[in-house]
Length: 142
Image (cartoon, rainbow, N blue to C red; front, side, top):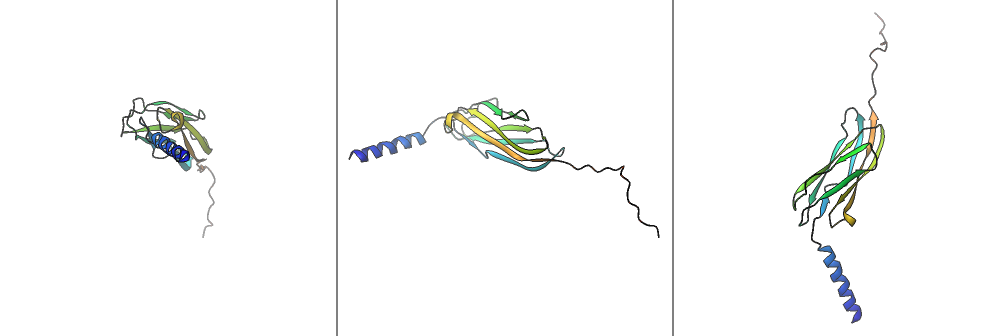
């Protein structure tokens, strides 16, 4: 009987943890893949969209990037329950592979300590320049 009561207590505790009240954040996607992009043709701006699926205002306290080559912008106002928000990320388009983390600090109760890691990935290439001054091959005259 003690085992059954203990099991019941554990189930009830787990159920109450799942039914947390407060702000909850849900991102449309937590990783954005730039794919292969060409420097100069792509601005490097991407947007992470999210929704407050909780029952209290969601506050984004801070958004930090893993390096200075990526600049995130956070919403200034609280996101009300049921509403959406966005975090813009501007990558500086340095040629080479992209693998960066953006750390979001919030008051979301459905994330461990309110912290959400977002990621960007991809590859930036340099457009091959055509030299118009290069001597063109001439066709033989007939």
